Structures are given as structure tokens and as C-alpha cells.
Length: 315
Image (cartoon, rainbow, N blue to C red):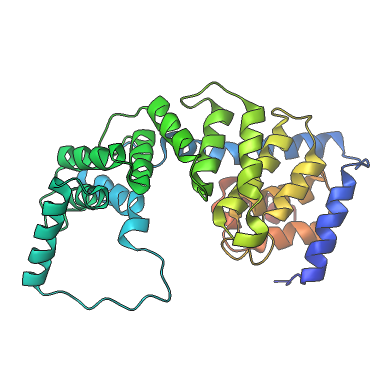
């Protein structure tokens, strides 16, 4: 596999940006094939975009959903914090009792943690109704993490009936808090696809741009993912003039080394493989097509599995 230097990445970004002002000839047949493949790629994750991992229909799905939804709470990122010693069964019981007392006395953080524990079955029997009730109390008392949990629960139908309007309203409330890029990006998706709010591509673009703006300084996966979604809007002409050259530029931008998951974003990688394979928005280039197909995760995308099979058949 070829390794691209930082200089080449920057040069590639600049070159692709300049292409927006020029014309890249595309053969009608391959261009149409590229458009169809990109549309198929964008459709691949629509179930998750709409349902956010739901519906949760059995105990295993509920357990997996709880682990995902409350991951940042049960696994807080603190590389410089000392490792907490394991607690004995008696100490765990005493800690749980203090948590119950604090929650009943109205401490929002304790109420949120108690609700999470009911969902995870940590020290308490699993009880979805108790979990929802305590998380709702914590959110009502101003706990930001509880508000986020509640928004994601309504968004995916975890422990409550799906209510995209409530989810969108809570995400909008969270937008008033600094640093919520995951919320910004998700709200952008809701405007792009009309989930709980009217379709508004301009709003979606603005929200994606807000999330993407933090990429250089925060190395955030959410910034990286938002850049892909800006490219998607350009590729589909949603709220902007359709522009495959600008789409390619944003897909490339989202795969820069050092961002998010080390520059690896399979949907963007697959989009670039398709575009180089068909000359859509970029100059047809077999080596670039193969490079992007070989990037880790690209072949997890069904349309790129198909693209690779097509290339093998032609050989």
C-alpha cells in the first residue's frame, strides 16, 4: 500500500480545490455509473441515519444499545487520571446507597448516574421505566449529560417511544452549550433528511460546517464525519449547485492524517475510489482508485466491494 506524505495530502487538497473553478471531462457512461454508485453509497447507512441503532427488540439489543448510548459515561476519557482501585462488594453497596440518597435529594449528576445504572443493571435490577424517570429528572434539573442521553433515547427509541421532534428540540437546546459537535452534526442530519424538523439543506450545511470547523484544532471524529456530509450535499446538489469537484475536495479533506480515526473514514475513502474509477469530479486514475480501495475499512462499504469485483472481472 502506498503511503501519502503530508506534502502530497496538502497538494492534493489544493489541487482538488482548484478543480472547482475548472472543468474535468467525464465520459457520459462512466460519469453516470459514478453518480449511481455514489448514490448507492450514500444510501448504505440510511437505516442508521434514521434509526440511530434502533429499534431495540430483545434483551441482547437493549444491552448493546445501553453499552453504546452510555459509553462515554461508563468509560470516561481521562488518560492522566489515576486508575481507581477496585471496590469490595461492601464498598460498592455503600457507594450505591450514597448515590440513591443523593438522587433522592435532587442532585442532578446522581440522578443521571442512577438512571444509567437502571439501564445497565449495575448494582440494580434492569428497569427501563426507572431509568427513564431518573434521567428525565436529571435533565429537568439542568444536567447536560442527562439532556444528551434523553435526546439520544428519543432519537433511537431506547427505553422510550421514538419521538424525533422531542429529540430535535433537545439537540437544539444542547446547541446552546459549547463543544457539542456530535449534537451539531446530528442536528444537521435531521435537517438534511427531515427527521423531527422540516427539510432544510441550508441549515444542514451550516451545521455541518460548524462541526467541520473544529477539525484542525480538535482532531475530532465528528468534524471528520461532518466533512464527509458536506461532500455528500455537494455530490447530490442539496441546497447547493451540484458540484462533484467540490464533493471530491471535501471527501479528501475528511481523510487527512491526524484527524479523528487517524484519517480513516470508510465512506469518504469509498467515495474517492468510485470517483477515481469513473472520472467523476476528478481525473480518472487507476492507481488512486486502487489506493482508496485498499485503505482500511473501504471494503466494508458494499458499493466498494462491488467496485473491486468489477475491476477483478475486467482483468
